[in-house]
Structure formats: C-alpha cells, structure tokens
Amino acid sequence: AWLSDSTTDAVNRLSNPSGLPYELVSGATIADNVDDLIDGEVPAFINVDAFGTTQKRGNRVFTGTGTDGMRAGPWCDDWTSGEKGANGRLAVMDSRSAAKFWTNRGPSSCGSSWRLYCFQQDF
Image 1 (cartoon, rainbow, N blue to C red):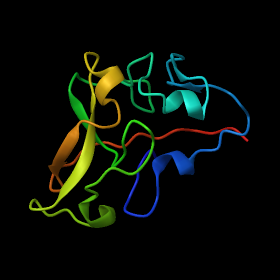
Image 2: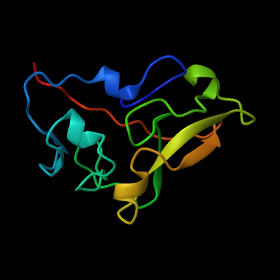
Image 3: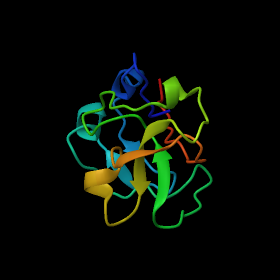
Image 4: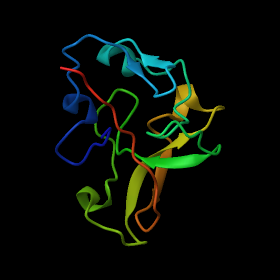
C-alpha cells in the first residue's frame, strides 16, 4: 500500500525492479517509474479501484504521505487507531486535484473509513 507511518516512508515500500510504469487497471499510466511517481504530480487521475470501477469524485484515501513519498503525519497512531479524536493524513481521488492532492491533502479523523492506494510491482 502507498502508506507511510511514523517510521516508514511509502516510497521505500516500492522498488519496481522490472522498470515497468505504474498504471491503473484501466491502462492509464500514473508514473513511468518511482522517481516519476514522487515528482509532485501524476498525469492521470487515480480514480478507479482494483476492479476497474470508476470511483466518485472526491473519495478520500489515507496515505500519511507527502508528494515526495516521505512520511507526512499524522498517522492515526501508526494506523492502529479508529478514534475520532485522532487524525491521519489523507489524499483525494478527484480529477480537479490529481497533481496537487493525489497523496497529500490534509488531515482527517481516524474514525473515518477511507480507501488505500495499492501498487502492484512485477518482479
């Protein structure tokens, strides 16, 4: 998952040794490689789920991650808390904010049920 916590950066979870681009299941390219993924924007909107179903505009995604792929709290007590009083960093699956907010939009209550981004890597 594209998910950071207080000790792990999401970008360090990716290695992509195959060198293949990151794509949506629909075939749209998100990034040519890891460096492209963390250059500050993505060329396509991440708006489909693993089944290829287009998600409604404005869906939220927990990431705990800044645009550089590094941890950016808060992290819902390292993703162990569902308490409304705690917060976690989120992103927005929204065509208007792909470049700016695909991974880092702001904090949200840990009591919210938001999605996660998952990246498949071929080895």
